[in-house]
Length: 78
Image (cartoon, rainbow, N blue to C red; front, side, top):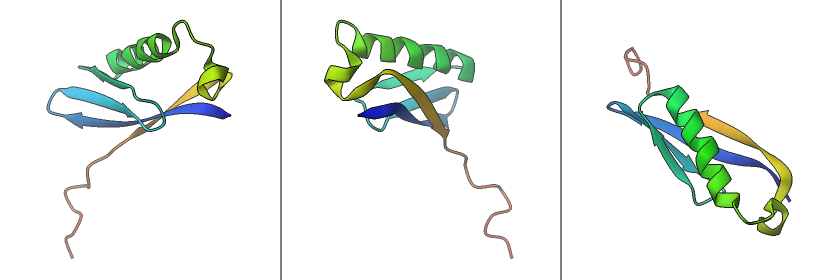
């Protein structure tokens, strides 16, 4: 049984995107705060009408996000 719903977050231009790694969920937001709200809404919709346990998750799974950071400008300089 999974206790965590995991997302990888990336930023391109003015949009943050969260891709679920163990759920088929994608959410976007123009700010990180908006993205957080959209992730919560998307997870609620994913489980709507279903018991999380029937989908292989704990009754109240946690949401974990990993934010992708671009390499620093000085990377690769000797």
